[in-house]
Structures are given as C-alpha cells and as structure tokens.
Image: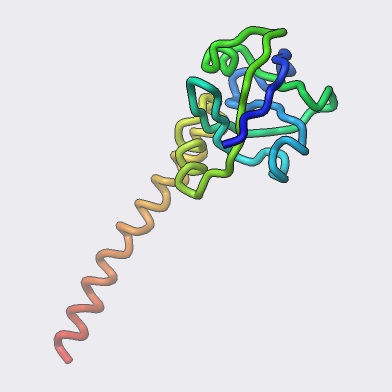
Length: 134
C-alpha cells in the first residue's frame, strides 16, 4: 500500500453528505469518475465514491464527514491510498450510503429482486409436481 500525501481542501457543496471524495485522476490509479473505491488513511479505511477536481495534484477535497472520519482539518496534510473494491464492496456502499437518493433505490432493487425470486417458487413447485407425474 503506497500512501500519498495530500493537502486537505473543502469539497464542493454538492458533495456534502454524499460519501464522496475528490482525488486527482492520476492519483486514482486510473479509476474513472464516480468509481467506488476503498480510501485508506493511517487510521481508517472507508469505501467512498471517488471523483476528480481541477485543483493541484497534491490536493484532496473532502466534505466535513470525510474530514471527521480521517481526523483531519482543512489545510492539514493527510496520507491516503486508494484501491479498487469488488462487487460486494460496491453493493455495500450503495446499500449503506448516507445519501437517501442512493440507498433508497438500492434497497428497492434488493427487495424487488427478492420478491421476484420468491414469486418463482410456486412455478418451480408446479413444474416439479408435473415432472413427478411423469
């Protein structure tokens, strides 16, 4: 794990409360905008949505929630590493995101999938009965 140094800046207002962090593209290991990634600091690992910014290469933009998680303040230097997460990490981020515009549709999708699977059970039982009759 290679931690890079960043100077902490405030995130844009539209990022507040949305589990986002802004890191320059070259320091995101090629990840595209809105990628869900693990951001590791010296004390904590957090899965966040990662975007870029037009500022300096050594600048990271964090909302108040992320600054609190990484125990840092605007103007301080923080050491971070970013890494990809698998599908389960992405699913967890969507289901437990702070922003209701993200987690509510994710939970609706999970419940819709579960109800769809349950609705197949009567059909499967009927098919098995039909096959048993021979």
